Length: 267
Ligand SMILES: [Zn+2]
Image (cartoon, rainbow, N blue to C red; front, side, top):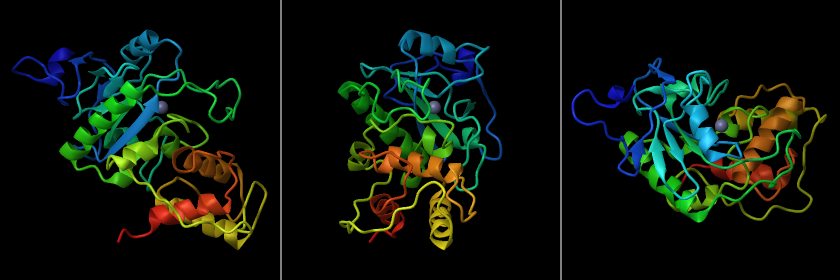
């Protein structure tokens, strides 16, 4: 399948930051669009990086990604950017449910959380090495520039599949990406200690209002007025990305202030 990268000249990666091609057969036509408008970041969630790479190139796995970033910062391209790679699965963002058709998927080698316990213990997985993060930043910057990807569409797998996926998790340094001009970040003003917090089982207008706010931001959530499992999963996913110091599924004042800060029009 290497010839799908380029019909004429020697096949070369789409990104100048990719070291080489390592083609996966797992891809298809993008549906409803011919160009990506989102970037989805993942961790591989496998202890063995070589095994993760094999899995993503195995026709039996039916999964793939566009780029694979090793711990040491090497980047290999597995699927051409103009093709639909199979990394997002069942997902939703801003009402779109075929995120594979709209995105570039990047797998970051990391063993990830122990998923025999769900939800997994926050923070209980290895840090991403510096060289790997620098490589991710270079790659995302290049893809964002070439495809004019909006910052609000640079997302975690967990953002588009709350409750089902937790990667790349709360140890992923989203603030560093934002400092490099990649993705949204918001620092809210200090939150009063007596600010309201909402949690599993709460009901009423404030719960409906916060569900509506998470939905407007992009999450696939229904406005039911009941703080249900779906709401808790959504709040948890938000915290893994934008309030990493406390990932507990409680919509406390700090969590909601951060959401408001992200939604405020930029001056
Ligand atoms: Zn993933």
